[in-house]
Length: 369
Image (tube, rainbow, N blue to C red; front, side, top):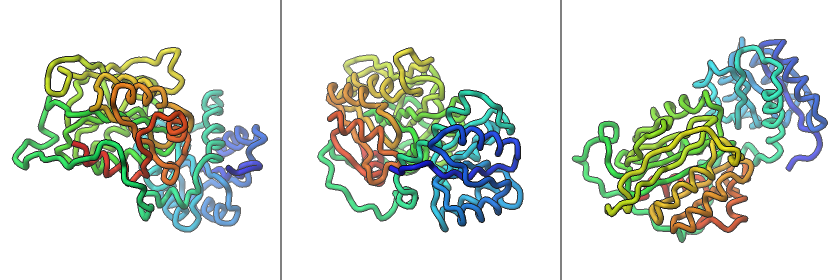
C-alpha cells in the first residue's frame, strides 16, 4: 500500500468543476493535487510529466476526449483513473471502465454541486487507490495469468443442451438447474462483463448479481451486459421469476433476495422469485451481497456463490449461509482482483471452497451444468 499523500491530477473542461474537485481533495492531508487540466491533450502531457498516483477524469473534453486519453494513457503509463461523470453519461461511464478506469463518481449534472455526500464519495474513491493492485497488472488480468491449482469444488461439466432447443432470447420459464449468486464492488463491472460475455446461450442456470453501484446506473449496466451476453440480462424487478438462461442485476439503492418455494420437483423447489426492496438498517452495503447470498442457502448444493473484487467484507455472512446449506463458494484470487478486500475477507473467514483467478472463474461459471 502506498504511503504518503496521494498525488492527484484533476482533469475537467469546466474551470468550476476543476476548482471544486481540487478543493475537495486538498481538504484531506492524505491527498496532494499536483496538477489540473482542461482538455485531453493537456491532461496527457501532465500525466506523463507529473506521473500522478491517480487521475480524476471528465469524459467530455475538447481537443482530445476522455476515451482517447484513456486509451493512450493505459498504453504509455497505466495510472488509476476515477471518472467523474454526470448521470446523463451512464453509457460512457461503462465504456471508460472497459478502457481501464477503475471506478466512477456520478454527479447530478455537468456542474459539480458542493453536496456533502458527493464530496465524501469523491475523496473515498480517490483514497481507495491506496489499496489497488498495480494497474499494469490489473490491465493484463485477463491474459497470461499463471494457472491456479485445479479446483476441488464441484467439477464443472459442459452443458449437453441439444442444438434444436429454442434460443436463449426466445425461451421463457425453463427451470434453472442451479443458481449462481455474485457479489462485487470496485473492479466488478469489468469482471462481470468477462463472466457474462462467456456464458453460453444454453446456460442451464440463473445468475443473480449484487454489484455496488449507484441507482441510476444499474439499468444501463444491465443493458450493456445484455448486449454482450448470449443470455438475457436485466435489472431485477420485484417478483421476477428466476429461470435458466437469465441474469439479474440488483437495482442500485435496493437489495435483492431469492424467494425459494420449496417443492418435490427434481430441482428441490417449485419456483424461485426475486424480492427487490429498500435496504434495512442492518444492510451495511447496498446492494447487499450478504443479503443476496444468504437467500440462496435454501437452494442447497445447487447454490453457487462467487465473491469478486471489492473493498470491505460484503458477502462473508452470505457465503457462510450457502456453505451451511451445502452450496459452494468461489472467491477471486489476489492475483487478479483489482481490490483484494471482499475476497480476502471471505478467505480469512474460512467460508470459501476454492480461490480462483478471474479467467478460471469465467471458465468455471461458463461450464457449470
